[in-house]
Image (cartoon, rainbow, N blue to C red; front, side):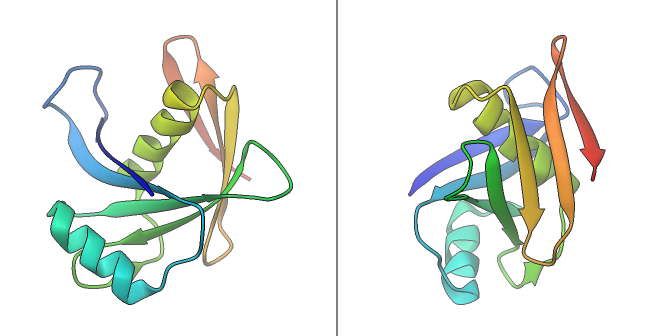
Length: 116
């Protein structure tokens, strides 16, 4: 598992809204997600697992230190930054554990976010 702390809503270090982002290869349960989120000590941590069908499709789950949650906007944007900037993909499609689908891509220097 690779773990990152990413500041959403900014292009400056230590500004914006921080979120943990964990890129996982295998499924992990909610108890382990909460333990990792607690260790990172941020309000939310996103967990990304790449789809077997596509380089740009990911399952995304979110956890606070106390509970798994359905969605988190800034953790989604932080996750997109990892996929787009660090993993070098031109776009990313996230599907939450609860079926919400989002599409995120580069738009000039910004990230464009849309619900599918």
